[in-house]
Image (cartoon, rainbow, N blue to C red; front, side, top):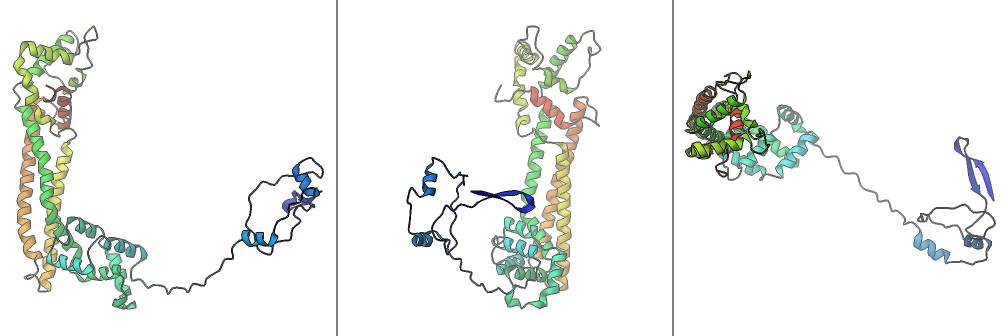
Length: 392
């Protein structure tokens, strides 16, 4: 029998007054068995009806079942509250320094290496990590305000490191200057190598024996094709037309103007087939180089040397105040290195000035507008047209 009752919100809920479990109520909280409960009328042919009417007897050991399938008693252990740790650093700074210190030698080793400039202990990679995680003035000031609230023997590693940073004269500038001496030579090579490649590429174009011949044949092709039109009788043309040679086909749609160019060269001037060898420097990592990148690299080199010089002077001045300038290896190292750095910077600047001259000559060579003519556009057009020496 089902009785309808009203639940929350006035909704009607169905409550079944019949009893289907005839065993004792468990004394413990039982584990649930997840199933879908079905409605059943009083009369019916199902096996469930037989069970309900008592036609089938299905007893079991209730006590044993309860012991086996009841929920385990949860024993709540009282955990003594840990005393709150007093930190001299804010949580974010403390975590940052703690993570950093896992990547580095001991704090004592860091300090010794920094004072002795020992890059066998602190190499470039380690110095970059130290520099990138250098505490800022606010973090240092916050630490200093709390210093008296905790004995030194209770300092965490991060706090010991912060104390070391603060007690080391001009820590950040010393790190920056030392790192510069380890990175500079590699950075100079990184600046000069593409400059050397660019110089060779520009010179191979300007000094090519056969490129003028190719351009002359192409100019003749174009003027004949454009004969009688406003585009005909052209004295010179923009290099972008070179990108269209492969797409321009004969009236049968078979032979491209690009293919016909080399057929003409083989027939009329086979010696000019040496053009790919002349243009070989164009295929030595030139694609993708931009003039603005060279300007930027020169400016960055100037700025780096200037920062190094400033950092060195500040650290030296502080060491002089402490009477340590004659014993600290930082002073002679940086004094000698600034001479080397300035000489190498001069080499970079001289190379760039030479490239400027070649760039001007190249713009004039192709009769381009000095304001709008771009070196990378010249290279792109010639690379598109010139066969690689490997393909020739």
